[in-house]
Image (cartoon, rainbow, N blue to C red; front, side, top):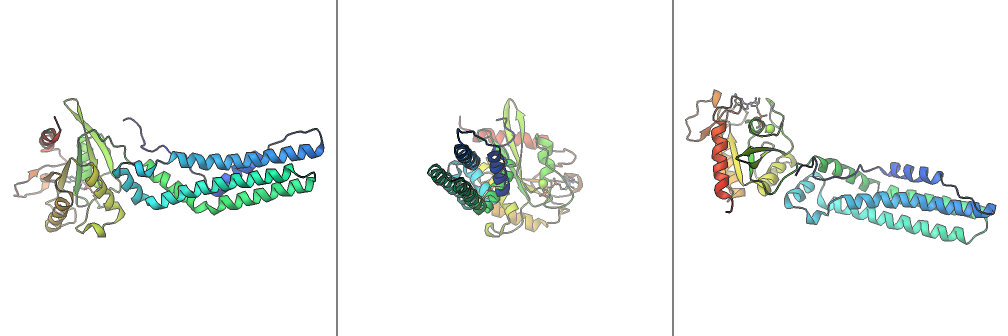
Length: 325
Ligand SMILES: Nc1nc2c(ncn2[C@@H]2O[C@H](COP(=O)(O)OP(=O)(O)OP(=O)(O)O)[C@@H](O)[C@H]2O)c(=O)[nH]1
Ligand SMILES: [Mg+2]
């Protein structure tokens, strides 16, 4: 997969922008008939059709562009749910269909009125009335258009996941060095910083070993608490752990310079083991360059690279064992 974005959704205009576009286009329409009345009638009928077409097709484009959420993989479904709420998104797409249908009806009925009168004043007033009703219909879905715009902006940033590739998800408390490790071993370029909660989104990198590609996923830091209490940023990590991990790489910071004591980090590990069993969890300790930990866990330094290659090799071996023959 080479796509830069998983979801290719066009920019979603605001209600005012859609109306502007529709009426500007309609204002340029001119049709000449054999009589003055015919000219006015044909022109106004064409204006109404032009305005209605812009609204109907613009909203139709949005409805088509958003993936049918039901058919999305659970990973993206839950990310969409976290970003905007799947119910809210479904409701907003439904509102587009409602609006399109009604705009088309307004156009049809105004056209009928115009076709059945010889009075220029009645033709004009039918057009004005139709424009007014179209405006009010589009304005009624203004909030839903904003929801679609937010959804689009969030979904563009979703990582592109290849479900075929063996996947390591790196998890742990904030600030322990997850991003530093992911940046060191894969193509991902997550930001590394001295403070917690640097990583807010899931990011994906790749490394290759003996012609096989592996995905490494960096996640936001987790706090010591139950699923129900987790905030939306932590929940992104949970979604990745739940749906993508073939192996969970759990990183400790025994120096506790991350700001979280080992006792808390141990409890986060226990929660993860419980929540995601039977996915295997590999426990490692980072910042070995400055720690004197005596535990039996694998020790690395994401900063100096010490122990990292050995760790990657052992992860690859474990993943190989998991792959069906
Ligand atoms: N001494 C030392 N510092 C490290 C090591 N690995 C990471 N750090 C430092 O730890 C801090 C946090 O690193 P990040 O990679 O941003 O940590 P994170 O776990 O991704 O943090 P969040 O995204 O906030 O959850 C940075 O200041 C890193 O330079 C290491 O092996 N040794
Ligand atoms: Mg990070």
